[in-house]
Length: 370
Image (cartoon, rainbow, N blue to C red):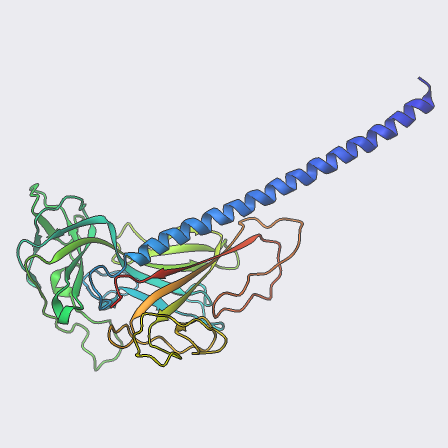
């Protein structure tokens, strides 16, 4: 083999190896991109499924969407009467706070049945009760939240109280102690119906509790009470977080899914807008071209706040839930894009290379339907 032939072979081999390396590099980039997209989809789908199931089970047996909360937490030391389904909408220009870390993402608070565990009261329950006398306590654990429901109260719209319970130390199968097993005595039956703390000197700091009475055979349902929101900062990966209220000392805000950068909620209120029919007609009008032009609230900027849930005049029929998820790592190459618009939040003007997916679903509020 001559020197010329050797040089020609070296050049040809170099070209072939360069082409193979370029193809391999392209394949590796494609695989990494696909993996990022798959992770984004998994996080968004799992979060959407969890929140959708919670929405479907919200306000069980209480069509009034109102619950007396007798557990305290760090956000509201005294919640009092609380909506079982509560949407906080933030339009652009909000101010970030501890409770509202992302000023443009919405928040959802739910009180919902958990795990299909329920029983009934064997004896009436009142403000002075120190335990729940139940038919059986199978499925309940120490420090569970229990929703006591009298679905015949208030003309059939129901009444409910959320309390913390623990299994009795004596091993009784027909009792749930009121309070918690870790000695947290702040949660007591007397705190049912307390009002928010206020700096207004004209408002008593500790008003008398609301007198309640749940009759025998009232439902006792194991429940959860949580606030879903987006937690993000300039130096953090955005994430969907959950704050279980009525928390104990060893509990707090918990990350639910990384890479979820936006949560948007729209409320479907059946008020007969634009149909010429009675207010409650069983349908929801979707338009969304201008403020207040349909029965979906918070889908366009400037929408008025939704009216309080009322079975006869404006029941909440559904929630439309939108999640925008992005990859955790930003690729070093590829096309640039920005966070897309969702409901009443406009698209971001900041360009980057994160891979994004938007998932949306409409969930019927079946426990609030007339």
